[in-house]
Amino acid sequence: MRFSIITPTYKRADKLKRAVNSLLNQTYTDWEMIIVNDSPTDNSYQEFASSINDSRIHYHVNDINRGVNYTRNYALDKITADSNWIIFLDDDDYLSPDALSTFNELIKKHPDNRWFVTNRAYTDGKPITKFRESDKPYSYAIQYLILKKCKGDATHCIETKLIHKIRFSKHIKQAEEWLFFYQVGLCEKMFYHDHNSTITDGYDEKVGLNYRKRSRISQFETLIVIAYEGQHLNILYYPTFLIYLFMRLVRIVIKR
Image 1 (spheres, rainbow, N blue to C red):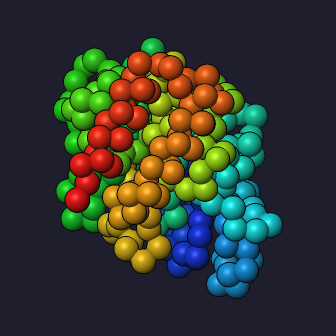
Image 2 (image 1 turned 90 degrees about the vertical axis):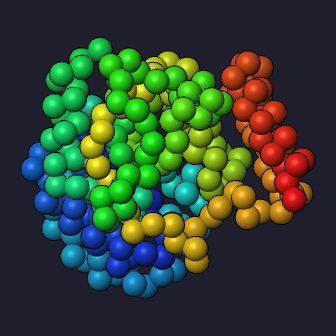
Image 3 (image 1 turned 180 degrees about the vertical axis):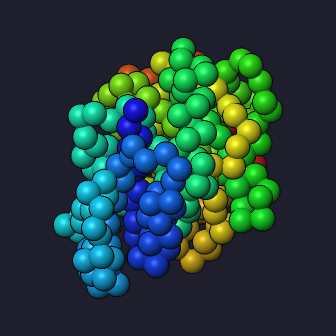
């Protein structure tokens, strides 16, 4: 059973080395890591590129800076034919040593599930992911997006066949990952397991992007693009899609 780890990177060659080492130190060894560098003019990656000596690590560089959504899509197109499961790992995060072995056991124990979710946690062990342990899977649209019974970033492990042609937004350069997971959620529910699989130092204020920090006009413009994206994907008139857009609109209108 092979896991494909998708890692876009942008001007964080030092942090990327840590992410790679976390794969090399996994107790489960059947994996591949697809890294796509979205900062082609950053010379700090030269040493990293020349140091790769493991055939499981595939390193690519975009021709120009294209944004994280394009970069993730490019990586998804590069996974090998024998890939079974896909995990998204940011370049400034890293996996706990037993992350893949934990997913491997979950897959064996719950063979009817095709989407597993575990914790993303701080280095002190405190989870960012706020799910309740349950024998029943969660609906991404209803319980995560709308009712917010599930909160926080998580580690997603999704069957490769399930993703198929699902991709991140092509009309938004970065962020709005929920559009991708919403489409996955139309086919499958999330099965949660309480395990700190991804470790993070926390949000990077300098290079990170926070939707709430954008101006009201910028947020309106983003909603318009999301609606266009929804129409393009034939999901604009799904009730849960419209409800979530309305919730976003209300938050923009009442924003002080």
